[in-house]
Amino acid sequence: MLVTELMSLIEAKNLTPAVSTERDVTCGYVCDLLSWVMSHGDVGMAWVTVQTHMNVVAVAVLSEMACIILPENIDMEEESLKKAVDEEMVVLSSPLSAYEICGRMSARGVPGHN
Image (tube, rainbow, N blue to C red; front, top):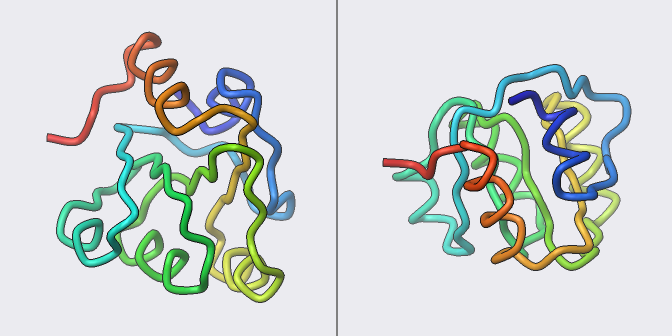
């Protein structure tokens, strides 16, 4: 599934429209503890988190994730969004809860991270 298709599935808006959403989502993950995500992050991951500070972008870039997903219409700070654009990391915001986002991804065949 491409990030573009994922956006439609989870009713998300792209907070970084300058960044291409034509990248593959290989798995999904939900966690808010950055040190844990750093050790479990993976290429192509769609990461659901309520964290919005700049370190979130750094962790996603480090793991070469497909995108960051903020549930419940959470917005990200402008400084963090600027960093995301600079690093070409897609940041999405969905009105759905983290639970609903993961459920929809799973139902469409996106596996969880092993």
